[in-house]
Image (cartoon, rainbow, N blue to C red; front, side, top):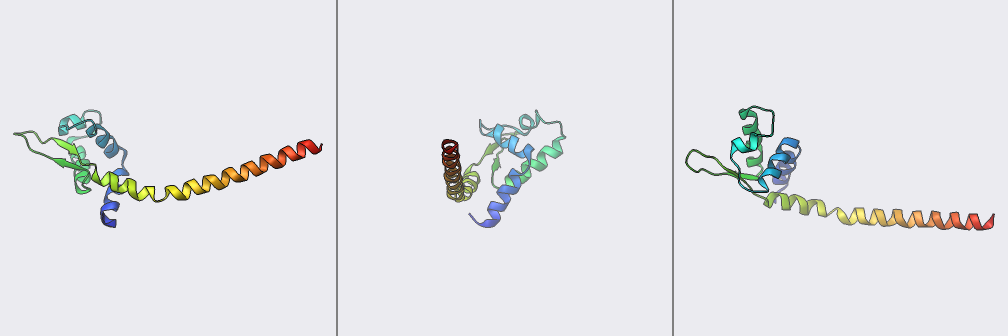
Length: 116
């Protein structure tokens, strides 16, 4: 995945409305009207959100007669997850160091208590 694609994915995910739309699509295909139901916004506003998601490759819009169903395309989410996972080792090592430090402090505290 090119960095530009990753930027598009993260930009699309930055908005809570778009994340909510993706959550609804995770359970299956939905029409634009169905996706708009829980939101207090105009149809053009929902359509703008869908266009951002579509440009990021996170959804695709089909055509069934007069219906324009939307469906989730999860590949960009996996790419974003893979990118984030690179930093997991860093956080695990940081937490391990913090744990070691806290154990040292606790051991010193116990020594001080015994000496009193």
